[in-house]
Length: 257
Length: 257
Image (cartoon, rainbow over all chains, first blue to last red; front, top):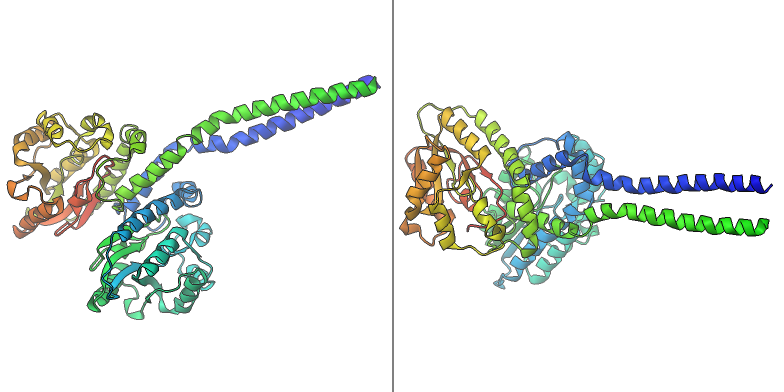
């Protein structure tokens, strides 16, 4: 009986050892995945992302397939948030140096998609931009009014409104998405902005640069001084009356011409 | 005895468990070391570098001290070269789509420092930009004529000249550095460009944007069509007559207003 008992315990110990060992091996797996095999790919995708952000790569339709995991890790792993936080610090430092005139004509422009509101949840289902743009699905997503505020941009928004800037929200979303956009901005706390501009039918098919330049021209015509302009696309920031300072937020998921 | 034996085995199992557990924990350490101590710093410096390249951080005097090792690793560890290679591919793809007029008025603009010629060797002695700009030392370095061609940009230069573009080299270096610049470009193979523009005394102290815009205005006035403009500073690419396409090469070592 003693022998049988010892044997039983021996077996148990082996099983126990195997269980612990496999657990330890599992614990190591995610670490290996971070460092070695995809390094060349990650280096390429980092170059690609940098080139997108510096506006060297333009007119791209989808994220390169080889960068799916890289872009996913970037968007949800913390670096995207850190990048936005650092840019927001720069913006707030610039804002703190502005002396407002007090005439109510000091203006600031913010974009909506992936500037005020995040579409990461939607793009997760589109393989973070590796799938092509799907206008119907995106429209359905917008109508759900479930975009979440990008925290750093929301803080910026609050500072701007409290400081006395007139904040104009200029979006490429068309007018059929007006109510949903207003609701979604509201349910995320974007309250107190001056006006929301949506793309009217006359700008359908036109570039965001042309449409957004015209809106800014109209504001400058009304007497506003555009101190700052923040967007996730270069087409938010280029063209005429772009603003005294422009700030490009990162977006490696899609390109808007 | 059975009871005592069971107890002994229980103790052994606990000891065994602790040994395995500590081994497993040790096994995780090297991995932790890879991701942990400098990770936060590297993440910050990556955000900073991205913000510099997207022109969100401007007017900086020195590289943040905490980013010395990061910038060094970036500049000499391969990623800088990879970034330039990817951008050059984009440029060459754009160039291949241009149909030249054949009238000899298709122009291209290249900057010198850290565009055609590399100053990495000099900046190594200036802690990759963590030390402040040192005009006298930089002048002495330039007079040595020992800058090396940036390989990808040199290939681009050759393609441009062979394709029939008139290449104009526009540098912020002043006229006292003219001979050294001509010699250095020549000894690195930059032969066949149309004209080299150096900063004349009248532009001393003026921004590169103003000076370089004036040069481009002059060229456009002469009838040239500026198809492309490549520089490592946003001030090479902003202002008037910037060119049909501009390309920003990376440079996290210094900022030229």
